[in-house]
Amino acid sequence: MARRLAFGAWFGLVATGTLTAGLIGSAHAGSAQHQAAYDAVLANPDDLQANVALLEAQLNQGDFPAASVTLQRILLQNPNFDEARLIRVAVFLRLGDDAGAANDLAYLEGRPLSPEDRAQADYLAASVQPDPTAATLAGVIRFGALYDSNPGQRPGNYTLSGQTFSFPADGAFGGFGELQFIGELPYGGQGHSFRVEGHGFARAHDDGSRGHSYGRLALGPRFDLGFAFFDLMALAQAEFVGGDLYGTRLGGRAQMIVDVSDRVSATLRVEAAHDRVDVNLFSTTNVGDGDGWEVSATPSITYRINDTWDVTAHAVYATKDAGSAWFSYDAFGGGLSLRYRNASGYQLRLGGSVRDVSYDAINPNVIPATVARDERRYSLDLAVAAPVTLILDQLGVDGDRAWASGWSLETFGRYQINESNIPVYDSDNWTVGLSVARRFSM
Image (cartoon, rainbow, N blue to C red):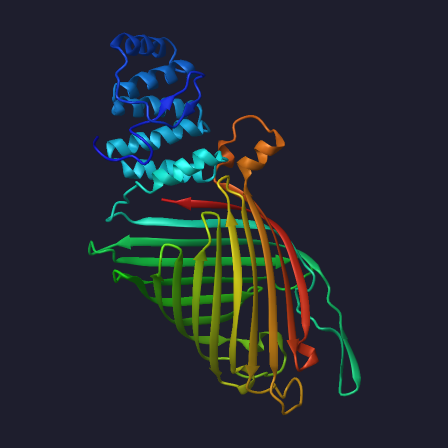
């Protein structure tokens, strides 16, 4: 055997003609069987059963190059024949074509496989040896609609110095789009690489309020230290409110990622960046200078409970020294998140966090006071996602669904509370939405 496969020498066929995984031995079918199957395909190249019979004969004879051609023909006519694609992964691996195997496995990620087939796909994936010199690009594109109960973060009714004020919270519908990607170019042949990470987001509401968007980019080397990965990256960010540039950020990030064990990984991230913020964009008076350096540290640890569940805990500390004291702060907090993903592609994410922020002073142009401003911010998130192909299966939708492969449908909700010692900064809001997402890799 040229290379070890994860669950046998090759795939076989059961008597019903349903493709399945299993070790079928090394006995050769006679050349007469192969010739008969070949003649049947020659007479009718689009006949699925004839192609399956030819594939069986080729696998029995160990003719993997010919089998890959037959599988190509089968999958061109039947792109959602998942078991055939699993067979082709195994054939690609026998032929040493790790890139072809990886492409098919990526396609199967968005397919509603049975638990057995998903386990076989995962097992095969462990046999794929990535090209150590090949550049990669992976990411996700997402867009959807939402409803926000309080997009302006208004406090509602509150009393200050014996006087009652009213800033009612008005809900609004909106839409958003998002793109995230990671590109990696290996160099040096020792596990080192050059990475580019990007994140773009845009959101708008139907209430006439200003839209919000930003773009972030990080690039730099990743070093394989043997016991850990170490990233050293430059950061750049631009943020827009409406059509106006609200702020920019330039800085750097250092990050250490350690696999403590098969189930536990730990990360420490430290960032330092200089903000240039137009805090006067929302005011007709000069409310101060928000420019300054922010330094933050975020340790986290992830525990993989089993093949479907994992839990992550994180802590954060941040401090900023801005041009005006009322934009300078110290913050600390933490959070916990739980994630579930089963063999069929269903996903569940549940998370919560709390963060305390202490500002050095209150803006005297807004609220004449001498006390500092202290806030506590709570957030609770829930998201449920499923592959579109799996949803169509559950709905009994027939027909070609190749267009839906790789897409997922997600519903999500978030509840946020901001508690402040200054009532004008108190607020709470909840957001619910629906989105579609497409993961890509190349």
